[in-house]
Length: 307
Ligand code: NCD
Image 1: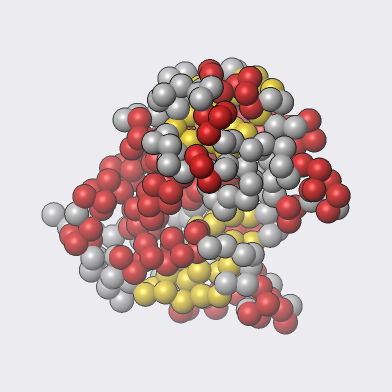
Image 2 (image 1 turned 45 degrees about the vertical axis):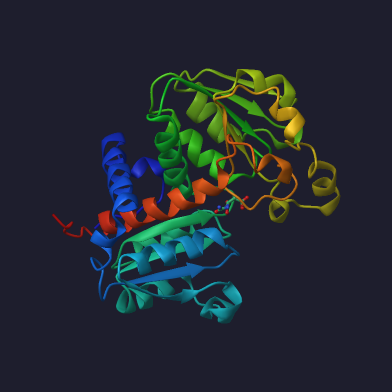
């Protein structure tokens, strides 16, 4: 039995197969509409989410399966003091696969150690968010044809943004990727990613503060929101929250081929006037996220695919 805790749990080749499957699902969804009949997905969300939870649930429904779960810690037995280990033991009796989001780093990993069913990490604190990374990789591959040979700008809250941590970890396995890390001093990439992932693997990167400086050099821009819920005090958040605002004017500095991605939710960091720009790909990214989650569920459940 396999779980998904980190984007590195699958080899590059396995990810390619999963992305091929996601593309097939997109092309002909009806072929996959009953493949998970009578299978159940449990979404165990101890932290707020719109996209990720609903994307998982829609993915399972699209495959003919059913869903159970909770969307906040208050509405689960966690409020009574139940451990994650006990919760997953119980859920293993009810469901065939589980997706867990938790504010504590490592909670889904603990769950996986006590689980009888595949567990997917749907975001653990400021640590990792591997299914967002699968979404991002699939989006890049679908838009650009392949992953590699590109300069990627990562902008915003690189300190607390788990999507960025997962994405960097996954991208360094592809050829000739360079990073420009765009953040205020206080929100720079933590050393467990900068030293242990980038420097250790000799990956080319640069740290800059101004978005305008980076824009002309990018093949892809990944914007992120300042993660309010992970700040220790509100004053620091208020000081940081509008540090970057990508708008139509700034988009003029970027190459014609530079797509803009964002894991969403957006707050102020991308002005709505950018949405109409053909390079704005963040809503299409949500759609790719649903297909890749379908492919992930099929892979982890080891389902026999239709001919
Ligand atoms: C991200 C997350 O939860 O980390 N959202 C998502 O899953 N699409 C990004 C964020 O909350 O800023």
